Image (cartoon, rainbow, N blue to C red; front, side, top):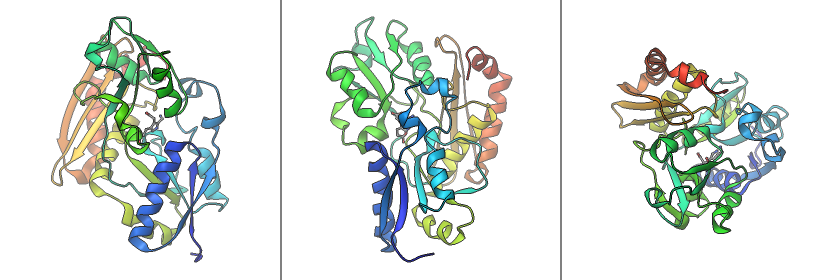
Length: 304
Ligand SMILES: NCc1[nH]cc(CCC(=O)O)c1CC(=O)O
């Protein structure tokens, strides 16, 4: 490995650069090695198309991977929930740092139950629309895109009454003060991998894979491995109405997942527990049980 600073590739959004800087600082604190951020523009950042129409997975990821392949950067930081579940053998998930908050949050001037009938709630996520519709079918769910600042701005301007965003992202951006409510997982199951980061490098950089391992949190890794194995086994992408959350207490891995019809009227929801060392098997097992109870039929009712 060359001796200059490590070059960390990041999307240019404020969320991406903030979380990339957190990873860079964590690495330097543990190893003393300098890390410099390299901004990369991805297709997902420039296109105006709706994410669900893009086929969802990978639009934020492939430009960063191209820079890894051409050697312009040494490592890339992604939001794990944006990473396709099928692992590309040219890359290694060298670290999955500790996840601090997996939940979704409501940005609004009042709590979800206190929104008036017909209130306009912005979210681009079919998962959030489906699950929130089950709780409040009397609200209007409006598809939105754009970065967190743009989305929050639609509440401040009065264009929308509320928006739903990942709590982790709002926290990293220092916008906690605007959170009216954090949804617990029994109300709104997060996307698989939500709130976790992925530190990726080329698989042929064995030196770097070993060094970056200092950033890894094994309990977060087992939890998100189960969530992502479930998502993969359901053959659903990041735009599908699938929620999953797993927690590893050091002995047991508990996984809960749901697939919801887009109108929120039907859902399959199940939990399973197993050994953290068998996280992938647990995710696959739960997916198979959910499919047996009709999960694939619910997903088939809208394109994914
Ligand atoms: N799909 C976009 C995306 N990818 C990661 C996050 C938030 C941060 C995270 O989950 O780590 C967001 C925005 C959101 O859902 O609010």
